[in-house]
Image (tube, rainbow, N blue to C red; front, side, top):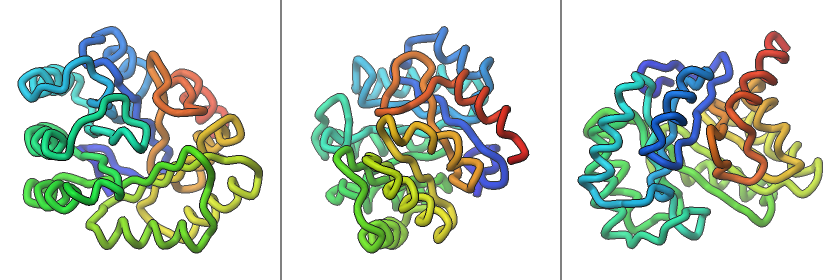
Length: 233
């Protein structure tokens, strides 16, 4: 599985999360500090207008790092409330400019249209599920993965809140059962999964360059350091 020119699987890969497209220092630091890809959290940008977003993406492309674009829905942690019509227009505008998009399984009104466009343009679709309250049981997690696959996801991303070690084990088991999956446990107890799960097969781990975009997210420098220490495990 590739996103852009980066091969996923086999070795841990880090996506640095960019929450401000005009922060040139953060974008430059992401490349210097060893990010493999950039995730652009467009819902966090100060402006979601298409001309502004398209200009920002074209500037970020100069890093030569593969780009994942995310317009996170408000109910799954997005910073800005954007209606389905506006979100779909923005997705359709940016898909030609990036290497992959991340859209939630719960975004049912626009999911099919986004997947169809990414396929037509030979881009990758990450279909994601975020749960900031708990980690569902194994049966439900497997059903979520199946639904993401059925909806056309090239990669499935599951991010849930870990309350105890059973949640940690449940997500590790899910990752062992499925290919082309990103598994993350959020929260204090889940921080270790951002290092261990990529070593065990999760396709990507996400790290912050400036401000964290998810509970338990580590900085890019720390993520790189821990993965280096555990290399070969």
